[in-house]
Amino acid sequence: MATPALVPAPALPPDLSFSVPNPAKFSASPKQELRRYVAWLLREAEVPAFLWGPEVTRIYGSNTDFEYSMWAVKDEAMKKAVQVLNEAGLRPCKKGRRCAKHRSLPFPDQHYHKVLKHFNTHVSHGPDDRYYMLSSDKRLPDWSYSCVQVQRMSKDGYPVIIPTPARYLEAVCLQSVRHYEVQDGSDFWNEERYAMIHILEDRFTDTLKLDDLDEPWHEYGKLNIDRGYGDRAGDYGGQKYRLFLYLDMKKKGQLPPPETKARNRWLRPIPDLVREWGLPLDLLD
Image: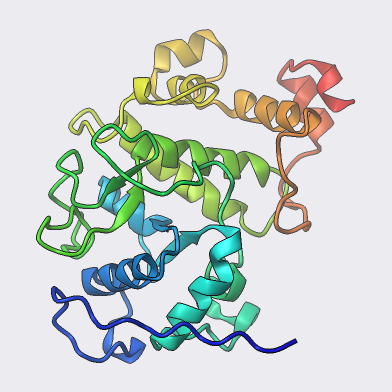
């Protein structure tokens, strides 16, 4: 089979100040210029994509640490996205799974992650879009914890699409549930889940509200941020409910298999947790 030709990288957009798209020109921490450049490359090539991961939670207002930029690309567009980025000089890491930067992550394809099916497949944005918004949206905070490069972006720059906070919280909670029992990847999704719950309970920002969430994540969010409600349910923090969702969705075939199979050695046997927490025993069937 003939090797497909690389898609030529288009000319640089006018709002970017640098002239050579060489990864060595960027510092270790991703900057707005790189963010806009990747967004522009993929959109010019008609590749549906959006920014993803801890960089997004920083834009929402968290203090999450990160040293990488993650993008979500539709499975069927992955090959084209890789061709475009390779041609532009953004090469996949040659260390593969030995790369120290990615050992704690769910390992992405060529460091370009295949994304979940939780989001609408039509990547667009608008003032009332449930799934996507621009990183310059006025609903986002215009401040950032100690890192001025990761905050609401200026409307003057090239637009970068990100998930809306509610849909992102739902997506990372779903991934956290999906990886409930496994070792690799679960820490990453749990850290994102904690960061988004912290934003949800922040009374000084309107970035994310409980009523923005759909079920079952509205219930999960309420168990996390409403102490009185959580205590009355005997589940403040939502740990019982999270296990219930994992077993119920798994039983109904609503969860794809986790990306890795190595079980979390610190996790107690699921049947023991079900009995201790008083969950329905038929969840174990």
